[in-house]
Every structure is written in C-alpha cells, then in structure tokens.
Length: 386
Image (cartoon, one colour):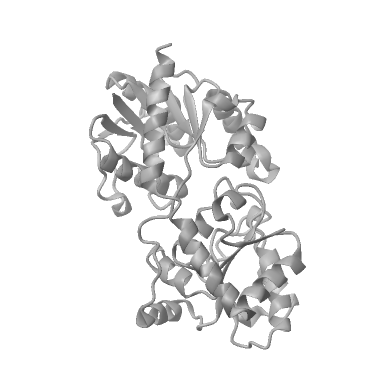
C-alpha cells in the first residue's frame, strides 16, 4: 500500500498538529516496513524543528495566483493541490492529519480530526471567513473514507456536530513524547527554576491562555489557597505571556491576581520545550482547569514526568487522567482550592499521585497510536474496494 500524507504542518512542527504528525511518522517508521509512505507539502521544509523526517518529502507548489494570499494558498493546497499530488503519485490512500479533508476526494481518504471545538464553542468561530471554512471542512468530513479522532468524547462530539455514524470513526489516543520523563537531578531542576524565576514550591500550569483554558479561575483559586496556607514561598507559574495574547478571546488573569492581592506570587513566563520536563518534574502540583479539550496532552505530559495533577473533570480529560489525578469541576472555585490544598499539605497523597501519574502515563504510547493508525489505513483501503 502506498500512503500519501498531507504534511502541511511540518512547516510548524511545534504546533499541536505538527507534533502529532511528527510523532506519528516516526512511530510508523518503527513499526511498518511493508507499506510505502510519501509526504506531500506545498513548500520545502525549512524549519529546524521538523528535522529527521523519516519518509520522502515531495514539494507540490500551489498555483502562483493562489500563493499571493496565505489563507487562499492553504485552502487551494488542502482542496486541490495536495489531493491531486496524492493521485498523481499513485497513492492507494491519502491521510489528512488535521481537520481539512478534500470535499471531492479522488483517492480513498483518512482524516484525523482532533476536535470540533470551532463547531461547539461560538467564540472559536469568530468571523465570516472562519465560519465559511468550517462549513466546508465539516461537509468534506462526511466524504472521507474513515475518520480518526483522539478520544471517546471527541468521537461523540463529531457524531453530534458533523452527523457522522459511529462506525466511520476510529479512536487513537495520543501520547507524551519520549522526552517527558521524571528529572531528579537537583542542579537541572534548580537551573530550570532559575530561568523562570520560581523557587522550590510552585504550582505549574501550561496549556494556553484562551477562553476555554479557564486561567483566571485558576488564579482565583490560587489566591484563596495562598491566603489559607502559611506558605509565603508558594508561587503559581503560568506558561504564557498575557501581553502577547490580548482581547476577549484571551481573558487577562492579571486583574484577578491584583484584585485578590497575589500579583507578586503569580509568574507569567513562556516555558520553552526543552525546559518542560524539568518544570513538570519539579512542580509541587500541576493544575489543568480547562473547560474543553479534544484530548488533553498537557496533563499527560505532566504525569509522564511524575507530577501530581489536579485536573478538570470535563470533556475528554477523565479519559486521559483516569484515577491518577484529582478531578474536579473547573467552575467550582472551592473544589479547586480544596483539591490543591489536599495535595500540598498531604505528603502521602502527593507521593501516591506521583506514582499513579507515572503508571497511568505508561498506558499511552506513540507506538500504540501508530499501530492503531495503520489498522485504520488498512480498514479504509478495504472499505474503498467494497
């Protein structure tokens, strides 16, 4: 079987879709020596972060006229140039690893839809252009041979929002990268903390500052917690920069901290990828109060590093953390406070959660994801021949 993949996101390897594609490709290379893979892109791969691409990469430029506008270029690539290149290359199957399947597929097509958040949350489909694009890809998804998604919750969402039958959707959970492992070297932990201006006692949050991430609520809960505990050195580290993400879509948590008198205890610094394992490992607690996730990779990364986790009980997150985290209603400030306080004041509980985190994380691997994805490829090809 010759499998062509839309590799547009190799241009942004640090994005969620870029990481999914890279991890999947590398795992497929490990497990599959029988099928042929071809990566298709609109432009040459130029970013260092996508190094060590495991399969041949073929450039298929969009028409010059379309290339004058980034949005039009992307649309033309997704709907015409990419699918045409797959057909011309003689691909038996075309995989689009993000929510952008061709409306009129000429090759049996598998599409990975990580979530349908823009169709479920009105704030995430701002603007007529975004709404029109979502209508197009939603309609196109119904023409795909098979759909892959990343959680049971996301699958149900697709059934509801896209009116897709369950038998056409396969679930392949994601996984944390190999670099997410516990770090215990005191010098490594100390140097990482120093780069972000935190001491040994810090609560960590990473995962974005947009509306559904519920960060002001985290700051509110932290403020109540800080006033209850006699721990003046306790800090909250939020990975992100509110100055770079402004507007209603990115509610600024700093006014909440100022109003509740904890501005000096809350630190906003974007944590670099190379420091994430150390910052997860050294955290007294990782808190993830998100209101909506298609999967929830951030708490899984934290668990892979052995961090105790307090997590939202919404959408897909219970599937990811299982019983390895304290799961609470993210809208309930007091519940968040109590969960955080219990971990910070009960050493036995914190140690138990660390052990549970590591055990839970072993249930997810990119090798398993690749194996299930390969099975989906084989099923899609068989379906196309009926």
